[in-house]
Image (cartoon, rainbow, N blue to C red; front, top):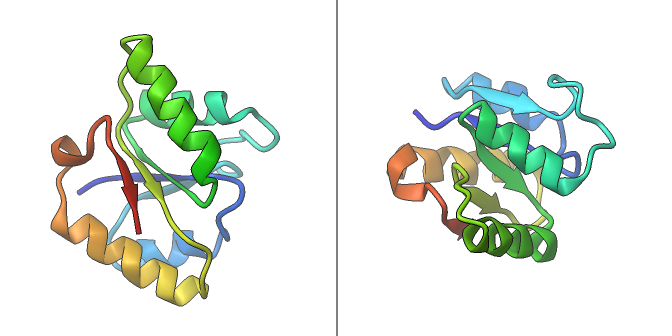
Length: 111
């Protein structure tokens, strides 16, 4: 299964909702990364082997491109539109069920 690291802008209720479905979820709060830059967040997610979940499309599209230009890798970025947290959890779970860690590596996905 693909572990997830959530950005600060994602409701922390996503963690117990996805944990209940058997997924490992880490938050900026649980990793003591509140207030850190987007680059630091993505680097932390990569270091611990997690795909990154965010609502922040513009910054993370740019960061993914920067990683690529610098020859760096990340574990995948999932950009989700803002919606009811239960619907978001359902969509993220479905995405994770349909993909492998290898298939999303260095990719930006939109859900």
